[in-house]
Length: 257
Length: 254
Image (cartoon, rainbow over all chains, first blue to last red; front, side, top):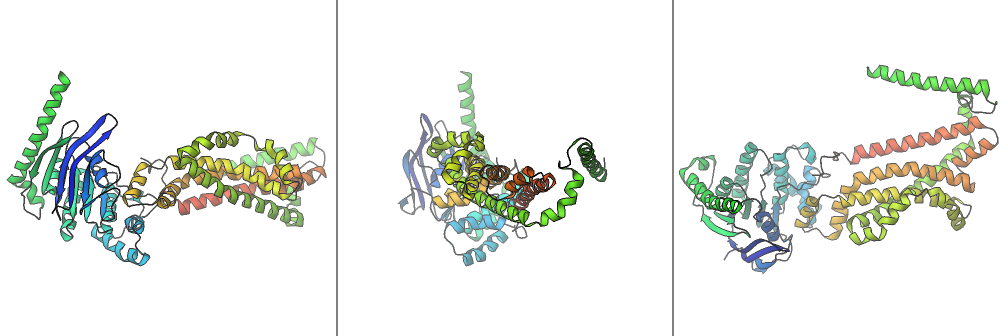
């Protein structure tokens, strides 16, 4: 039985229908990547999944229960990092635990572990402004992991760091995920990233957007830098690209008419 | 210009002004008019006198009490105004309007409500310092970046987490800016209230010494008031450095 089931999800802002008829299921320890052009509602959909905003149609069921607000075992990593600037790395990593009602002793015991895990040992007392973008997102990741979530929602987490850092963080995330595999929904506009991360890649397109195709990624895990060089990876990347390309071409003709 | 030289130039500027004052006072003014040499002469005994010590303690205590009340009330009202549209609509016009109103205008009314007592001074100080604090905190609460609130909600924050864990700390730089403005207004309010209702304090000391032609002594008290303003400003700067190390103006608000 899938852990997360989305049926007929749709979101509308007034006249604007952002997405419609989204069906999706995510299994235990499965990584599902959502890829689509900017403005296709990926991030909005993820916010619905996190219970931050209500949907207009359809339902999201997690572990058999429809959601109507943020869940305790769901954690989100944001494109904007979302670090609180008045808290140090330690304080930010502790934030989710603190709000979840963890005791002081529990926080003292667990926070250093997760700071270590994301490679921020030695920066416990640094404020966010003192960190590079990549380090800030490591901190954001540690905050999400610290509550030991069953579902990780990644909202284009590496979109605002530079290309090299992005690649490093992708493999760091895969390494951390192998240590404690959870269900993960990974939203990105990078086709490569989607194929590298996902067990399945859900391609969104259209206006309002819907699922264009679900691509099974049969690349073996653990995925490493060698994965990026494999012919199968290139094949899958081209396949997803062609699905989206089709869309781009049609949009072009619409503009010309 | 080297820093040392810049300091020397500043000192030279100050000394020239003092010398000019001294010469004009000696040449043209009556003997009781305050002058640098006279102020220097009476400085030790005036600073040590019971009247000045008592006046200082009373005025500072009044200002401190008033500022504490204004910070608490102003922060509460500012947070409500900045976070709840309804409160903003209810109070916005009045808070902004009363901020610009000269508070001396209301002093006669305060005197009738609170009598010729130190309560009038306290009320004046609160009235003078409440508005800049409330206005600034409201500005701060309005400009809390949506990302912070989103993160908090994603972590299942309850309303008190949002208020005290996000909105308040995010507004702290605004609060301190408001307090800085409020300190100056509070000191003015206290001195004017003492002039007006003749309650004991440093302001009243200035008034009394002026009327009894002890202008040098009066001037020592004026300098003391200036020194307090500088000291409180330095205290706030220290607090900012200590507790707002995270704040980089213009950087943390995307």
